[in-house]
Amino acid sequence: MAPKAKATSRARSEERRAEILRAALEVIAERGYRGASLGAVAERVGLTQQGLLHYFPTKEALLVAVLEARDQWDAVPANDIRLDLLGSLVEYNAMRPGIIQTFSALLGESVTDGHPARGYFTERYGSVREKFAAVLRVEYGDRLPGGLTPEAAAPLLVAVMDGLQYQWLLDPESVDMAGAFRDFLGLLGDSGGGSSSDSGSGSE
Image (cartoon, rainbow, N blue to C red):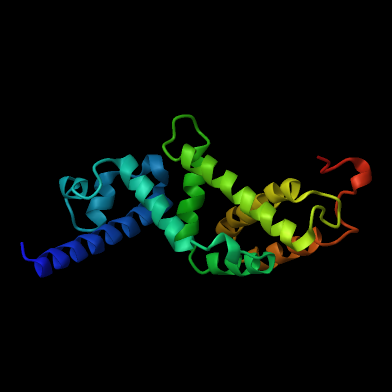
């Protein structure tokens, strides 16, 4: 095959893969990972299940590709993450409910034994906690105004971000996800609202 023809074929294959990933996002968001089938994804993009297997040989391979694609869409260099930008990230998430719905559905299912995404989310949360701790240390130093260390506050920051996503997905008209998250960031910097170091909270 000529180089130009190979490039064209490769481009078409990548477009098809992207189309399949978008369809998989939709199906997983609607049915969850366990309820989603390769056949349902294939039907949505006009392929047979056998045709889909040409691009993704197993359901697990498709799931990994979906998660990797999501990471690429969200990729922000660690050095570019600042506390004031996290609120903007939450606002950005509010503009793509389908992706957030899929991520949340997979996250909820991944806590069960044997789920193929469990390792991914375990590793991801470890990395996110480390990044958020570094962000908090840049902002506040070794102690936040309320007395917590950055490492102690980082899991709370992650929990609020993800917990707000679930509430917003369930009732978007009542939950101002971005506004509530900015309120929480304000609490982190409020020395009167946090746990004090006298109580031993956040001690190393």
